[in-house]
Image (cartoon, rainbow, N blue to C red; front, side, top):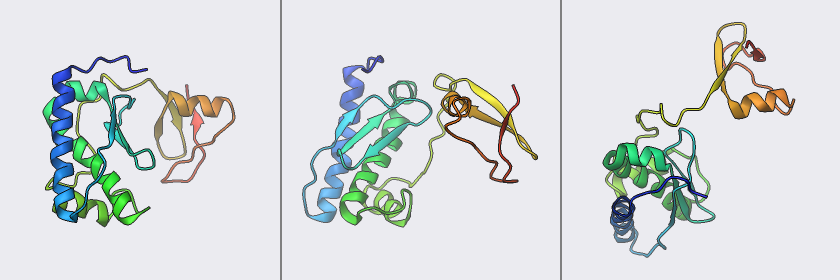
Length: 166
């Protein structure tokens, strides 16, 4: 259940953006697309995520409220582009040329892969791990997987297994 209340005016602004961008896509492709369901349940540092099979977009309610218009202008089209790309091209690279083309040519939005929003309010506690070449910070979820011996993590640079350093 969503514990963060999103003001109606903010939800309406999200829907105006979504419908405007959806209309651009419908005009470009000369076809209609169903309006995706919007859920305000994305957690952590992700601003949003697209779920093509469910035809839904999940938005981070905390980041939305903290960054309102920039969030709407960037994240809503970004996630809609993922849905439209899946519908038009099937399974392709998440931020590949089809997605970039959809963002820039169809939705008229810069194709930014990541957001630059402040994350202090959504950042979770991290745990220090080390390898041969550096310190790493693992999330609580990954740390717990290590403790339960479900996963092992390795450094992308030296290839050594990460070890908890307290």
